[in-house]
Image (cartoon, rainbow, N blue to C red; front, side, top):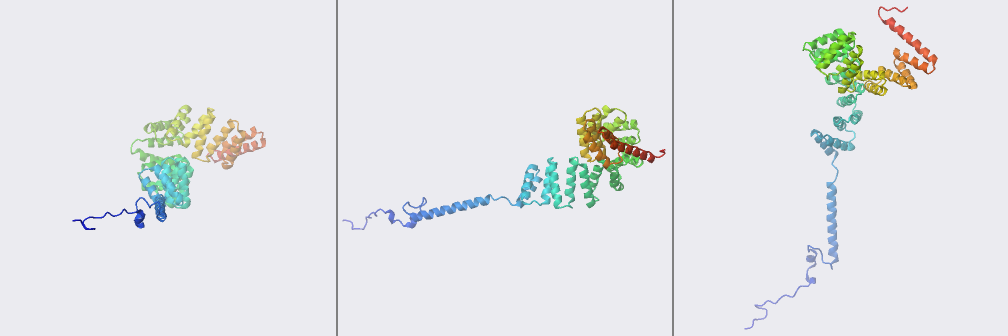
Length: 416
């Protein structure tokens, strides 16, 4: 029995042509639209362009620089972590966006100071103070920057301003007293520290500094009281130094030499111990040993005023003029305008044939310090050397007048 048509046997379907496939289905093929269908190719290109644009936008967003607040947080975190170079860079980046941030400039100054970049630190502190003049912490940091670069006068000036705002700040008071002591301003040290002595009678650092100022200011009676207070604690380098200084002021050089030598043996690092030991050695005529003592002081304190000045004098006497000038200039950096150093530099010019420079320096010095007899004597010598006899005679007359006034002021001396 033949099967009926269409029953039990499937007739194969004719192959589907490309034109039979719905257009939507063709456009959705993963590998893109058919090459012979232009509208679908256009839609694919648009979609691709949109994806590229979206990717570029996301990349640009991801590469946006951090906000100023984020920069500041990073700088503070790096500083707390002890990363000085990284924190320095971060603070600089932040200040490009917020240049008037006192806190950031102050912190940057502290980092620069820690790295030994004192000049840059000073610049940052000064800018911070321009923005906030009454910020005591910044002013003290500025003073410390000056102190570390041997600009003691500038440091003292800033500290004096800080004390006007915070008179009870002991740190500032002690630092200013130290500066004044280095500058030879003994009366200022006494004025600063005397009120604190009553509050802290057992503060050894205070007693030592105050006692030193009193002795150098020729007040041995009160100074001796403080020395005795230190001696009650047992023999010390500080007490020996004060005793030696007292004896130096009393012109008892041989006894002073004993105390100062002992002080140097007890504590070779004690500030001023070798400078005063050197002065005692000069007073006893041992110039070679004195030069060695001054060099020893400068090993631990390159900016010691007394050692630089006295070593310069020794160099000048030995005709080591370049070394002498270098020593005098270091001393002048510590005490700008100091008459003794200016006089030494002027006479050094005179000895090395720079007569015109010596004349200019001595004229300026005698104007600023009219009672400086030796300066008038040297200026008269310069005038005579320059064939300016009238000027030389005038300076000579000034010298005679000053000497007469000095003699008249001394007790028991009568000038005929």
